Image 1: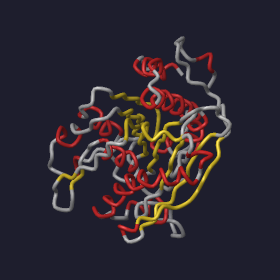
Image 2: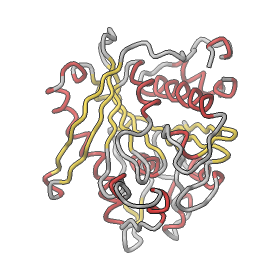
Image 3: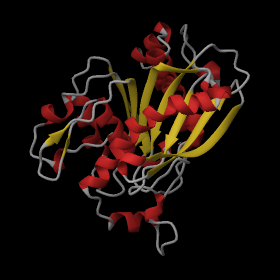
Length: 310
């Protein structure tokens, strides 16, 4: 991507990473859930000269882990953000690691219980509870973390997790809708949103209408579900029926499911991968700048859909 290809506007998200980014790995342990372990990987910039930095949680897709989407989080973190990737046990890469065959073939045969799905949801507020303590013990990043400006993001199953944090209810094992809305999040990005109407008889308005925070929905015309097989148009239902007035939709022409994760899975090489990754990075940064840093020019850039010209 070349910056001179961007449209003329006050806000111009750069294609550079201005600050060096470091990583911290570790584990949070939840004693209330039998010692459940939530591995984390935290990206943060150094020598940035900032007084505070917003915090963003990243939730991986089915069969993924905390190491996904490094291209994206390294870029965003370099612009003054702390990005917290977490691994959700039970829906992570441990399902296929060390097993014969391709991971996708294994995952297609794997049944996920509602209890396992709900545990994934509980991982997120627990992580938020743990972060202030982590910040105190890691002042090189923690001294700058702004817990009044927290965002939620995720890919595929992680997008579904973000949808739940934004207010979308999930049906329990008896079909009753349960809310997981986490009020500490100010905004979120859904990389490959996940429709859930097939899990319940509830109407779209009852499922997606309760979403009550700004969201950026990203998908692509080749963003078929590798597990369930539905095409990208089904992902648009989440955007169409969500009720919050500040919502954005980006559909990448030729964009596929794995471009957001930085890996390919069983998908063929995509000649547009580099261009798509550039668009994903700069548009994500613009959204976070708009809603976590209150940058009015960034919001104007988003509203004009300038990413289409990148």
